[in-house]
Image (cartoon, rainbow, N blue to C red):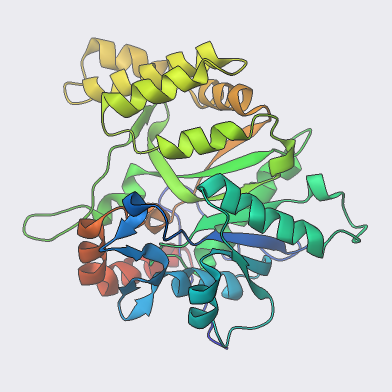
Length: 341
């Protein structure tokens, strides 16, 4: 069996402790859905290939994710959704708790294929109602993912659930600027740098990992909308996302928050009066409330100190840089948290 040795590390933002997540953090290990892409959307291909099967550091991207999930103490079954024939070839030899699910189409449809496969497996389990059973969702193209980063994230989500009056419908993983700074370009050293969202408590960007109870989201269709426009690099995507929010309850507030955050980002270079004033209102509570109202269920922002969870393969340039820097960046990821041990 090909598994990944669990790596110890620390958070730049918060101390993950020596064992941030054990299998008893939730009442049972969480199932995981790995979104392994499609061959049918040319815009999602890199060099004409599905990202899941690209090799970085001599290893297919999907294998990095599956190995990390198998090595994580808080993960049970792993459902990999994508082109079934190619996935069965790539994942041959993995244990029986890794299951391949054939793709259905867009990201949200594929995600539900994995969720429903997990539900079928646990349909007669009386431990917890299916709609209350949390599940982890992760993309396939994360060459810096580790078992430790997954355990740490799930532990943070469980802590938030245990402190809340009712469990959250979604925990959205984000990284802060310090955690990804080691992966930025530096002089002649190549790197990947992407725009951040400017919030009152820090500069953040989405990671590619979530824990949730998707059936507790009343407006699940907006997950596909958010995914389609999540790369908010220009006003076209930002305005399109804000316009789509108008279709939902609470949409005016979400649209305003989306535009407000983009304005804050534009003003961040000068860091003048209006930047400081607008940013001060971009609170965690406002953002979480806006997203919760649009999706129709309680959503929580969860900051992970593992910046590599935000470094997916968006394009051929990302692929080239990740392949070139993988050895050094994997060492950086492995060192997260070691100063606390």
